[in-house]
Length: 70
Image (cartoon, rainbow, N blue to C red; front, top):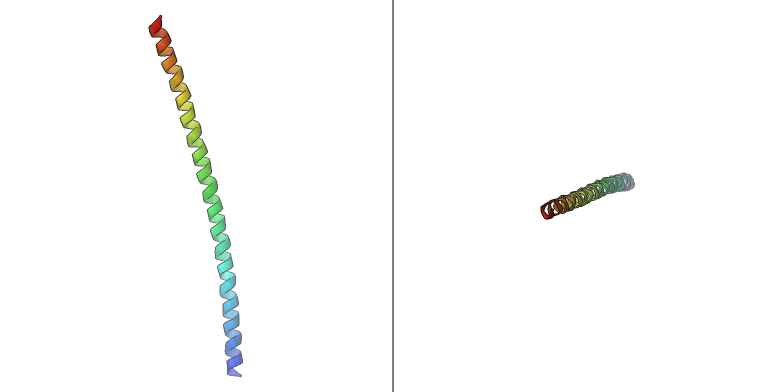
């Protein structure tokens, strides 16, 4: 009788532990997806800024070359 009670308690604890693991896994996924989105946004923004700086630098160099030729 005591053995069955012990087994039931052990089963309940195991089920509780497994459900806690599933919640932790879901939380980890949520954090990972959020991190991926933030990283992607930062990367795209950095790329756009560098492209803009490059284009503006080309314009300035062209203007300098054109004014020195005249």
